[in-house]
Image (cartoon, rainbow, N blue to C red; front, side, top):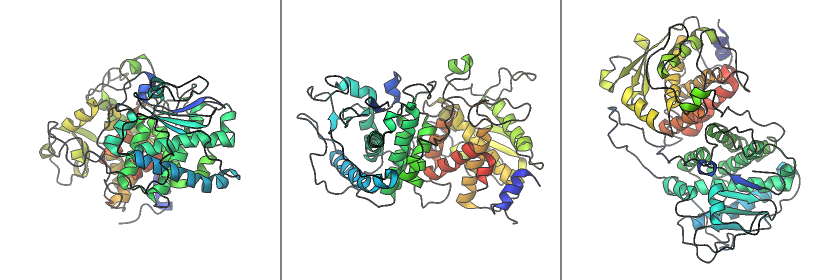
Length: 514
């Protein structure tokens, strides 16, 4: 009996048939680091229609409906200033602040054992038309240009929050594309920094990424409450999906050392902290200062990685047979997956798979083809083949917000399905799909750079290694292909898929058996 088989049988999964004390603590965006903010994407539709034609328009909704908010009772909860253009989400943000105050009044004593103290300063809307009446944080005043760099920030000096309310700001883009809940989550994150000021966390001179992780967790805890209908704001499944997107949009740009001052974490890290809070609540978030979550590498591995911006060339060439030098994306991913499942995972009956590109689903000659080819890749069990929908794959690869590891994730899931079949899995439906996500994550754990926090020993001959941004691309792909509604129970919702994938990345094969 193999190690993985024993683990899975034992658990019943397989059966016979910001800153310091007074500094600005901010929400980070790509734009804040001198890069262009990633354009939003539609999380509810496949990248390409089933026939694999990249010229076909996507189907389905391109925006999410607004969250449900109560009637606003205090129109002065936000300092809107004298010239503010009206926004369709203004009332929602007022209701969000009221709900955050109510929640923290109830929650802060449970986390820290003392009473909650409301903000002493205001929450300010910043926009180009506003006169110079925004307070400064260590400076006489804050300009709108300053706010644009941060998107939103909390100032511990005077206990206030400022958010970008401009037409062209990232928050307006997120709200337009995914609903007002995204801005609510950003404000909940900034409230998390106000919590840290009250609890003394900001006086500990911790790495920025540690305090950002906890603030992301607090935002997730509030969003979880909204999703469960326990407060004054109610989130739909679409709002939860939008919250995941919001975490991705305020990640550190690839190549940034998240452990350096000002580092906030990759999208994978930020989504993970948000999910921990969502599932486990604010008390769990309070523990993250002493027991932070593991972080993924975000710096380039070498000069070639930097030159390629973390993306291997698209193609199937295996490169030099002796050294692998010159290998293209599938030329090294395919043998690496076969080595992992055949050797590292100790599945003696695992038969190496072949990747075959096709231009349409009609070209995939297979009587028992698994679903998923319209999303990019699908297993043909009878021929031990994974068919790659090449037009879909190229479309994902060429989009800045996806890239090469969107394809690594998709074929990783197909290899995971083959592993389940080799082990005689009797699990069906959504649960099986989520196990595949976890198993794909367990493979990813073994291609994290050596000597990083979660790096694992690997079999001789394995040469794959993740680049910065790769795990963010996998998360985006899970959002793209996940079930639109949590009750669909086909592939799993984006939240469930990311949660399972992350379990595998963090915990390895053992986590997939729990």
